[in-house]
Length: 273
Image (cartoon, rainbow, N blue to C red; front, side):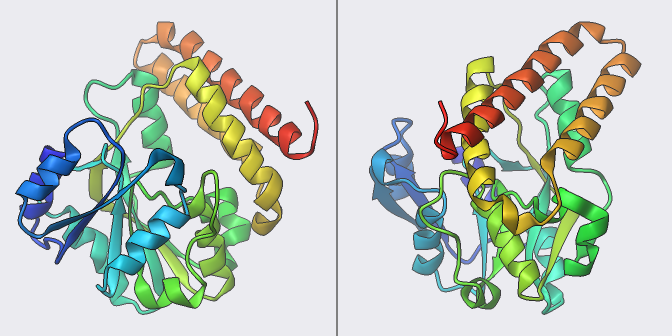
């Protein structure tokens, strides 16, 4: 957290205020926040945390016309990240802008390839008319680092709450339905990656399956399976090209855990076992 706060204070467009929502962390975050000028903190219990409700509370506790959501494990790669992230908002039609995520240097090769697939080096702005072309990617904002326009956020009623996961994906659909545009800014970069175990992949995608079972109709015919197959093919080819075939089996085991978790979540939502 200290590294993130230092990076934000050194941005060419530093935030007017920083609000930390701490859900009973044990890493010293409360003490660190108290030591920093201009940093506010809201403390909640872990049981109170809700992906949509907690972020909505934080958003409404700030008064800036734009608000950047960041998770504690994301870190700007340079001092111009925030400046670049904000630039597409010069267009009043743009409701939200998502940053590019680059895997940390110590991340696994498969994780690096996944981030390269999911977050390419080309920026893009799109609207509802582009959904047939982009498919499920039309809705893939990420609150690991994403800025929102307050007037647009208020216009669509904010994040769904309560919600188990993917609040960013659902509000993306709300924005597009309301006629707003979304942006992906490739030169606004953050270090962000994960090292999930198979169990964690299964559990995470079980929640995603529950989410899709309940809200999948909001994304029309944009199914997630086709995008998943393209991702798996890209990562596999990348690993072969880099001479790392030994990474392929663990990667595919992770994919299997995702698929099984996704299906389990959908069955659970449908009342199955």
